[in-house]
Length: 93
Image (tube, rainbow, N blue to C red):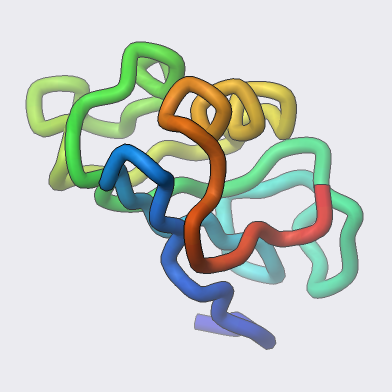
């Protein structure tokens, strides 16, 4: 993997967590190490999130799959639905 920087896992105020990554070799747009990104990769959320569902690699395992090319607006919508970010970080969107 060519990941230049690993972003810290996002934890929302309601306890929901997810990994949000972007960079070369990731399921994001653009596929480079410099943002801003219009779409990013989400991995292994702590619970199913209907906002992310359409992007699931394996919809039958919502907490054990990767979500590719999730639009930045959907990431912000998901974070807002879970009360905002308590800790962690997002790639530049």
